Image (tube, helix red, strand yellow):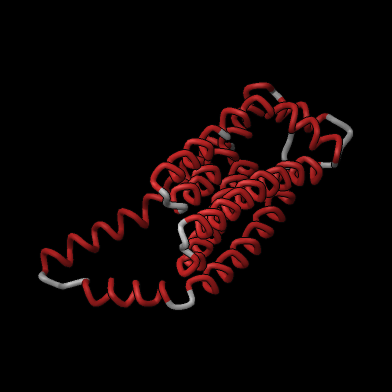
Length: 221
């Protein structure tokens, strides 16, 4: 798999430099206002950007067809893409953890350290879900349809929550008790729940990898 991984890296190197400008900009923003959550959000953004860019570059260069004709297994092609995504997000998560720790030391924000780490882990979990689902869908239907699917997964819940809020407002139903309960639930044991969410995301990511291998093995040249 090392050869195909290296080929993927060479193929995506220029695009990755451009993509990494996004977390760099979020890091500068977080440093400017002193809020680590803004860098954590960049993990979620990269969860959408990496698969979209990787598969788009692959199609534009013809690498998707060439890789099918090379003397490598289909599993190696899929493994390379999934491993590269994990490595990129692991590096970004490490940078985020370092930023959270330094921020806590410099601002005496130790009491808030657990909350910031929970935010980081939660964003990492969402990023893994976006990566896994989008890549599995891209191997099956292509990156354009996969991108639409992921955008639907993002926007449909947001639209549903908005419609729920508007409907309750018009019916005179107060959502304040629910919001208060959710806030209290988030404060209590937030770090533990974020770790559990990340564990579930890893399992779903592994499932997406397995599905991708099965789908790509049946793909025709």
